[in-house]
Image (tube, rainbow, N blue to C red; front, top):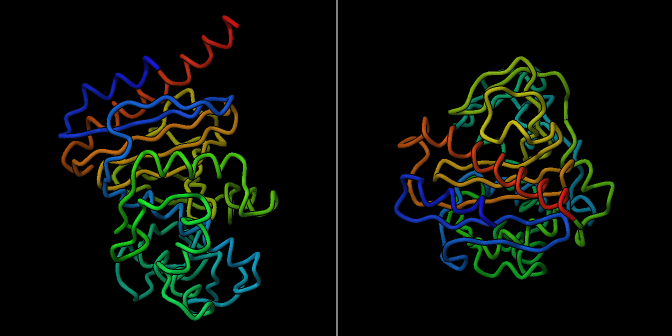
Amino acid sequence: MRALALTAAWPVPHVAAAAVLPDGSIATIGDASRPYRIASVAKMLVGWTVLVAVEEGTVHLDQPAGQNGCTLRHLLAHTGGYPFSGTTPIASPGLRRNYSNTGIEMAAEVVAEAAGMPYAEYQYEAVLEPLGMTATIVHGSPAHEVSSTVDDLVRFVHELRSPTLLSAESALAYRSVQFPGLPGLVPGVGRYADCPWGLATEIRGEKDPHWTGRRNSPGTFGHFGGSGTLLWVDTGAHVACLALTDRAFDEWSAEALVRWPELADAVLDEVAATRGAA
């Protein structure tokens, strides 16, 4: 796929990327087996794992978790009232999107306690092993201290598009807006009067500017990571894209917020052109 060649101009030591096309075929560039720290892209795995636990009856989304009035659903949707890092609440639940590593870590711990095993072990048995994601490793916080490969994340993308571990209802909830209409912040990108999130996955909505492309549909969901990584699934175009790098987002954020949307639009344009020529 020609669009993926745009990653060669990115100011990073190493990069590997993939696009999953409407027919399920895969295009890659770079070493798809090379492990990278995926940072907050890992939060998507937490959301999927929690939903497996919900379907098993181990936990339920609206059970109390954290401060008074907070639920597991609030934690996954970044509305639990917790800061980026730290366990002291900064707001009441459900008032705004306070993007929080702590909230996702707390959600993972709820599952671990209910299952009676370490969270990393539960995630491996419930999600990673069944999907063949054996190169994906939780090194510490499941919210951001995880390494993976393009090959493994492509397997996860296939699961996101055609779930085998979750019911259609749970998969829809994962990528549907939780607590609609709340303002909030996407760190490093911008503040929005309406900042939609699903269950540990961001939803594009009408955010502008954004790290996905202008051609991405509002229903596009995904995440980017502070290690210079990204993954999105466009439900309108039936296309997904992911890219892993080893340069921290903060070191090239201004350029990344140009290069990443450029890649997204090029991928979507190329798919649309191929459909038109068919």
